[in-house]
Amino acid sequence: MSDATIYDVAKQAGVSISTVSRVLNSPEQVNVKTRTRVLATIDSLHFVPKAEAVGRARKQIGRLGVLAPFFTYPSFVQRLRGVAERLATSPYELVIYNVDSIAHRDSYLASLPITRRLDGLVVISLPFDETVAQRLATHDLPTVLIEHAHESFSSIEIDDVAGGRLAAQHLITRGHHRCAFVGDAFVPDYALHTSARRLAGYRQVLQDAGLTLTDHYIALGPHGLAEAQQLAHQLLDLPEPPTAIFAPSDNQAMGVLKAARERGLVVPQQLAVVGFDDLEIADYIGLTTVRQPLEESGRIAIDLLLARLSDQSRLVQHIKLPLMIVQRETT
Image 1 (cartoon, rainbow, N blue to C red):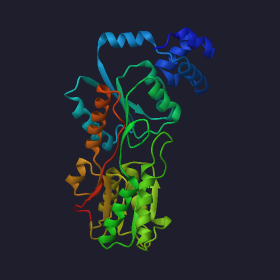
Image 2 (image 1 turned 90 degrees about the horizontal axis):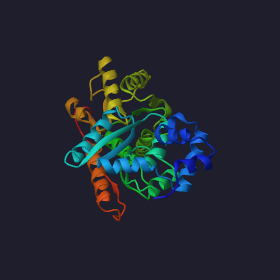
Image 3 (image 1 turned 60 degrees about the vertical axis):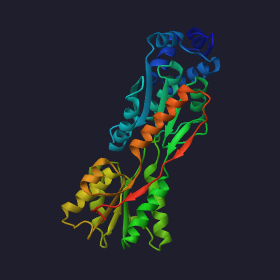
Image 4 (image 1 turned 120 degrees about the vertical axis):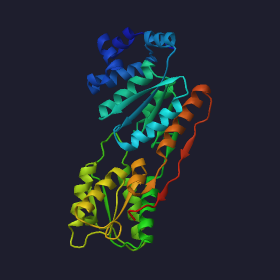
């Protein structure tokens, strides 16, 4: 541990002690330029808040953090169930950090390694740069990534492009020629663009089969059930409406199904629908979907993290989980 103090950080960064404290405890309240300068100084001095470290050691409380965007999404909740299941018999409590902006992401990834409030961290669907990677390593915060990979950290991923290919292959085998897509028009800069990746795989297989996915069969908008419902209506209003629609999440697929029901369409005879995730509700409503192991990814992440905590020399592991089509009543 460095002998540098908060006074040394403040002096070298040219700021007050209270500003350094805010960077450590409420970084989103400090403007980006100042926060970056203070963090660079902290990194260069290898500063660690001693009072915080001593307090954590005295309390002897194990805490593992989960940092993720969209924590209210059903897929996140299901993944978190796997995390909680593994932690139920461990000596660690779970702390969830919701990310809803670039500032929040950067603030958490800047302060959490330095303040040592956590014993380990799981980062879900959040890419970060080399500065953050170096900070996590320098301050020895064991970290596992889900849906993103970095050579320095263990990770669990799926192949989103392959998932889109599975959806297209399934619809082609069911005899569909007019296949459409309902997905996300934009994804925040702090998150991963899984919708675009799934569309790319879907488009590739359709093209290989001689079924060009034209722009008017691609409906993009904000993520959500109601938004997907509206987008599906737009597609179904076309002079030659699609006979099949793939949505990159089960939540959006349910919006498509609601639009079909409102129009009196018979599923799957008049419209087939494929989702992605295989949420618990997908089975109840008979939704055909691309299954990804959500709960398993959460369990594996904690297993990798606990293994790292017990043995710091453990090698980094990069795990790819398989995807599969689960055919139900909607196709």
